[in-house]
Length: 106
Length: 106
Image 1 (spheres, rainbow over the protein chains, first blue to last red):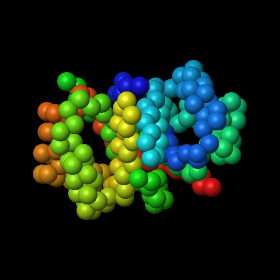
Image 2 (spheres, rainbow over the protein chains, first blue to last red):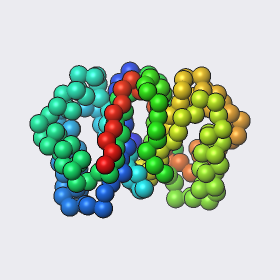
Image 3 (cartoon, one colour):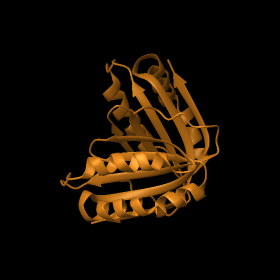
């Protein structure tokens, strides 16, 4: 896991913030599978993820169509359903357009 | 730390992704101070944060002017400088406009 090297803006971010249930059964495998699958999608630019009390996963995309396609991907939809049933107590998904970015590196 | 209850979009997100150095001296205190200070700023809507290998902090704001004011806040600027000197190996800041959001709660 590292900081994603995204192209020059504009591009899009999906900010997924979640609180897990205590049920971890099958969660890690599914999370890894979904990252592998997202990487195969047209327009996918990268993903950043961290979790303590809450989990934050930000995926970056070329355009809104890529995000829509990923949301509607059949395997992803199964994962979303399982997420609601078993793994997440609550989550929030935010679709945002990145207009500006800057960074620092030692 | 919980999922921020943001108003109806549009609003703005500052996605701050970072990799720490091994130097933690003064870091936690400063991070807490900056959150307390951010909460006092006009246009601040909330903040979500998690860290494992990378840290992701997303703060939410009413408009771009609030973000600009916060970036230029004198105490925040001191923290930013110390961050570059001591605490961060690398970071990336992305300014994004949230156009759509949806959530789930059990």
